Length: 166
Image (cartoon, rainbow, N blue to C red):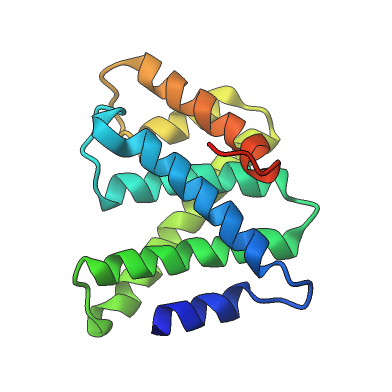
């Protein structure tokens, strides 16, 4: 219950965009789960993989939302609320939660910055390198897997911002 109250307070703003943020976040989560399911990326579907792919997906959407910084910040906040809830479901207790979230936030900010800089500069090589380094732990069995993931992720902002299912 505490999670829901905090989620509502984080996402509520004077423009009433809470529902929009929740909808955007839900669509992004659906896409991430479809990409990570059934070892589609050749990696074990676990929290670290979902964290990495979620950050990539959120970075692409936030890059497209630069004109609405409040909505972008609300999406970022909700993303980390989701990470916290996921960790709690996995048994991380309150004593360890602060330290874990601090590390996730620092890692997330760095990764998001790398993705966003590459997208803003239209530097496909830098974006691929960041994806291989972060999502695939520096090694990829098949380069086409990276291309398929990037192709899907780069189409995501248009789909979620237009309100289409992923």
